[in-house]
Image 1: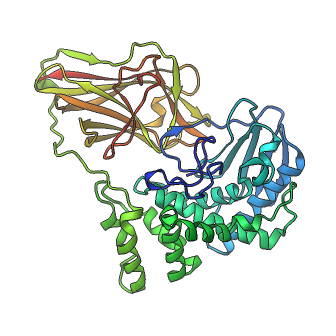
Image 2: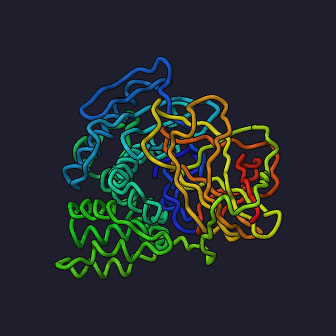
Image 3: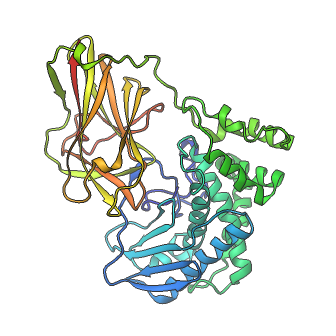
Length: 445
């Protein structure tokens, strides 16, 4: 999915393996890391090219033009060589934060956001330790996939980052073929950062590049322009999060398909598809009139917001202990604020009621418009049809955020050890910077 700050290393695959084998690379997997909302820099200058607009401040025009040409050429190659439907214009925002980290991310639609500490972070990789030119090609590849596969929650990092690493490497080659060796102001032989580097990685450590290799095999079977139709079919496929592979395999295994594609899927699905098992507990609901009428709000936070975060590739989760037997959740409250464009996105966010193993008992959806934009956040109450919970249960909230839309969820200052980062069906990671300000109201029957 894109870069969020430099703590992500290039294409971290399953088990945290570094697909680049270079720790200082700039592109990495978007797995449960904090999102910084995109805002154009005040007083930014602009460079406009065909299908690309670069807004920049704190760096020279030469680098802004080189980045624009890189993105424009990679975008054209994604259309012409691979047959993807790319945005009419890609907006690139570049800003300098001397005390921050190097980070590049996309919003899944038409925006790239790059933060550097200084122009030195744009110099050739042997000097800066950052593969910026490759990074923008990597992001174009992400955009090609995510525009058609909107719900990619089924993808492992080997699938999402592996694709971006494979196609991004191909795009580097195509950019070099069109723009030549003098594209980058700090001139270097960037052709070495394309498929040549991918081949070197394969020769050195095949395990680390299993994802890119899987997509490379598919491209060799069906051809470059047949991958986009597969992605489009997956984008329209309804799947069971507990085991998505069967549904996702149907477009590949349809009558008349190349039998090699079926063999590829059987070989690759365990690597590419993430299963999120559901709880063995079924969702047991009752009418509100069947409850006692006495309610209790459960909270792990202290009510004082000390920070906030938006998470990409994960959710905000809190553990609770029911105060007795036959308890039913009737409401969830979240303290937060929406960011991004003035109008709320026309989509829903998700709330899960989970068992103690972080497996979903019930999934609920609510409109983004529930949250107000900006400010320090406020409590938002979400009604829940009374749903029985076990003694120990978890409430998880997921917003599928990008740099241009999302919700900042507030946290307090002290961690009780009951807050997590993750999504149901996989083990959550402890959140140690405080407790998410998420609460559950229960009543007994």
